[in-house]
Length: 228
Image (cartoon, rainbow, N blue to C red; front, side):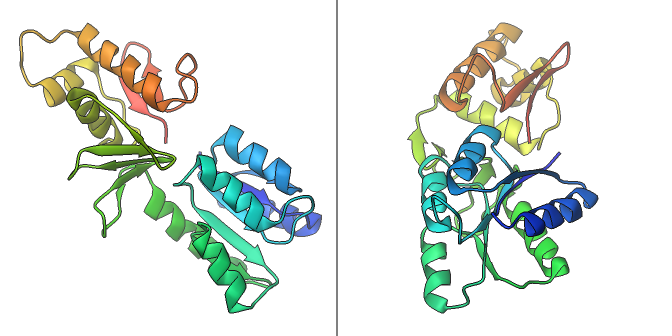
């Protein structure tokens, strides 16, 4: 289920947004302060963050900056009562993906959320760069490079191809045999243990805790999938 984090200190607005988003099928968490928003953004890895600008303890700009230090990819939609252009520009330069001024229409908000989620969906392609995105990981097939939270990750050739194959399946399970065929071809030297070894290396390099993987999931007796 797609998870959205709302960082908003106006209790009525936050709970009103949560009710409407839950009706649309989203899982929703709420943070009422800046530090709490940063903490939940890092621990929950939401699919999208709705971020108020005026917050207690840390303002929205500080929260956005803290989020972007660890996560360059999760869409952030800023909400604020400030309508000045300089405020919008500052938010966008710090890494916000969109900006709405209060009061706003619910239908427009939902439409913008859907648009942001489409652009950040697993396997979604940035038309300008050709990059594939999964959470805070970006993959560039043209240059065969990978970044996590904006930091380059060195992958061996087959690790890269394996990751690319899983991401392109957009959450669908891939059996070991399917991965052996698509990544290694029909080489007689490849066994299922080869796939497992490369999966372990991908987890070591890409997971926050490789002992408790949240990205590359083992599906018992079936294979592996990317958790979207």
